Image 1 (cartoon, rainbow, N blue to C red):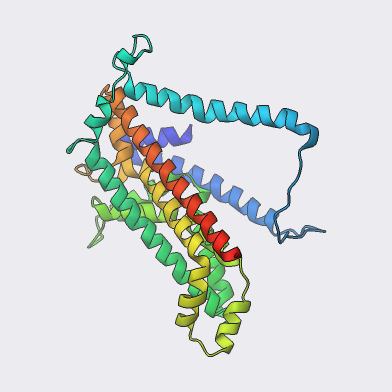
Image 2 (image 1 turned 135 degrees about the vertical axis):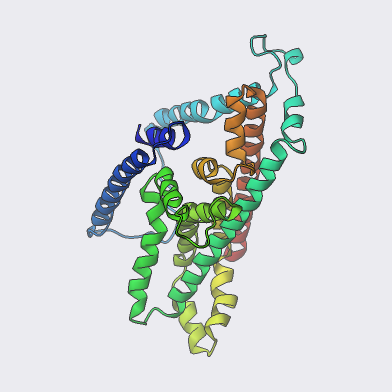
Amino acid sequence: MLVSEIYRNVTIDPLDFPRASAFASVLLGMGVTVWGLQQWVARREVPLGARTGRRVLVRGGRWRLVGYPWISAVLVLSVLVPFTSVVLGAMTVLRSGPLSLDNLTFDYFGRVLHTGHGLEALENSAVLSAVAATVATVFTLVYVAVMSTGRRRPAMPGLRRVVDLLGVAPDTVPTIVLVIGFIFLWNAPWLPVTPYNSVWMIVLAYTVIMLPLVLQSIKSSRTSFGDGLVEASAAAGASSWQTMRHIVVPLMAPGIVAGWLLGFLFGLREVVASSLLRPASLELVSPWILSEFDQGNRPEAMAMTVVGVLTSTVVLVVLEWWRRRMQAARSA
């Protein structure tokens, strides 16, 4: 695989950055080509197309006899079996022993959450992910503010296309291609100042990688309501700031929170940028788990994985509850 070959060239001695750059260029070309085809297909007009303004319930009929078992099988194989294996791996004292209460323990969770071990990596990942998600959210809000209050300016359509391109560009290529680009750009010897080999390099990488996720979430929230309220606010004499503060942002609040949380969770589990761009003294969750596996500490690595999965699940459940509550309040 090209991705694994690039990773090997930049992590295993002898390092071969030119070879990694060549493979990254191939992946970049493939990603841009596929993205260009997608854009060409998306611009074609679809006859008899329409957007529904309400939810539509479609009954499966006889297909339910096949659909329910198929969905159940997929959930069991893709969620239940892997997660059960990870939990048992994090609690098993003797791997070759039988599955019994005497062979299970919670001690490994205490070890990874002890000060100086996995807790430091978890705290660092949480803080850096929160900062990067905030930066990406603020950038998106500024973009939405400009688009909402200046749609009739001649430069706005061009600016919108540029921002849309930048918003989806990180999704068109594998993360390792972006990381190779960060290394070659910010590690250049002629730069007077660089964030390379610091926590700000991680924040920058996280922000760029999670930007498409945050941007699409907040933009979808903005397109859920038209421009009538914005135009009415302007006709009533409200300034652009007042319109954003009292109308646009409150209506977009669920999308803003959802975008921030999705970006935060993405940064929390990011592997490639965390492994290749972090300073040697900075512990992060994903590299810490990989390091524990390499050192043969399988239970500790599994325990940290369980902690990360449970944290993400709790955040997503709270997000879904809050989103439904906001929708119910808006409908009322």
